[in-house]
Amino acid sequence: MFLTNALMETHHESGAKRILVIDDDVELCQLLNRFLTQEGFEMESVNSGPAGVERALSTDCALIVLDVMMPEVNGFEVLRRIRAQSHIPVLMLTAKGDALDRVLGLEMGADDYLAKPFNPQELVARIRAILRRIKPLDGDARNPRTPLAVGDVEMDRGARVVRRQGETVNLTSVEFDLLEALLQTPGQVISREKLTRDVLGREFSPFDRSIDTHVCNLRKKIGLLPQGTERIKGVRGIGYVYAFAAEAS
Image 1 (cartoon, rainbow, N blue to C red):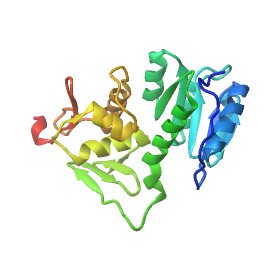
Image 2: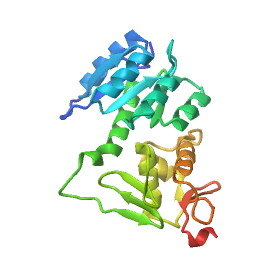
Image 3: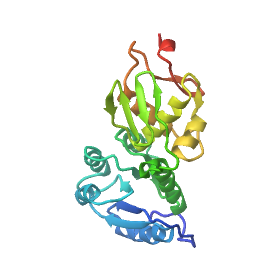
């Protein structure tokens, strides 16, 4: 069993979101089904990698919880196949203390990770943080989000689309929100602590390198400034800054 705490009394919320769990541990899936249902979610589970890929690409779910350690096809290969066709948010379940799995999952496009064994309330907190980030996809005509542009990068925050020199850049939900945070204050350093709270929706830990991995992935996707220097610069011991083109020379 991979839940550290017993299931506890929880509240319901309206507008249930469907969660797809891909994990070969049938007992864990049953426990998660009980807990997530109590938390107001709808849940479906699939117990093999190939079936998980097929279900992920054919069903309308809000988020996928994906285990790394599965026979036949492991979670990394499942993630690769899903990311080839879909940007649906993915939270990966990794082995406790296996930092390599966590980094690899994030580099392949996972939105977040959680190590087994885990507290079910922590899982729900991570799920809700991810869903809050992608909520603008639902649209809000009463509060339209104005476009954002810095140099040759344009961000349509309502449609959650990013273009560089007119070409669309495919980003995960985390990468989009990270870039948005940086573009809102170009030339100003934003601390890792603030980025972790605002983008990942949790408190910063010195041992958590998730935000650095997401920055690395984002750098690769948006490329260099026209003069060949990094758009996102790291400030040692502090955080990151989106560089103005004029400052990058």
